[in-house]
Image (cartoon, rainbow, N blue to C red; front, side, top):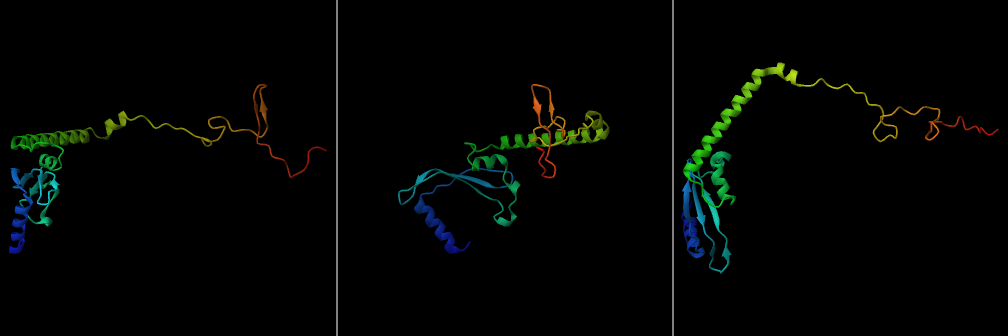
Length: 169
């Protein structure tokens, strides 16, 4: 940072009445700050801020796992209080236990192999579907050429006139 930028920043902090309060650090060396709500020199109310100063200042060196999930939740305001070291260590231990348990479960599943999977699966059903669900005769026998009737119901056939000849002779 150049000398003029440092001077400008310090002047800005004095004029803006911005007071950073360090609330904690994590195992990676990142520092977390809280800036309470304040009024700036123009009388505007600036809402509270939660910021992190990365231990590694270069943006290109940042990776997703560099901020613990507990601190990430605090920064994003999904939790009100900053996490404690004990809480972070407890959650880290719990994550490791879950990772080990899932690995054991995966290995047990591999040991059971295909034999147990074949026993558990039902044989595929052999169905033959004729027609289309939107057809009026879906799931029934296809209509015949000749009309059918049982007295109370009449089912027309698929009759078509032949060669355009009149049958009223």
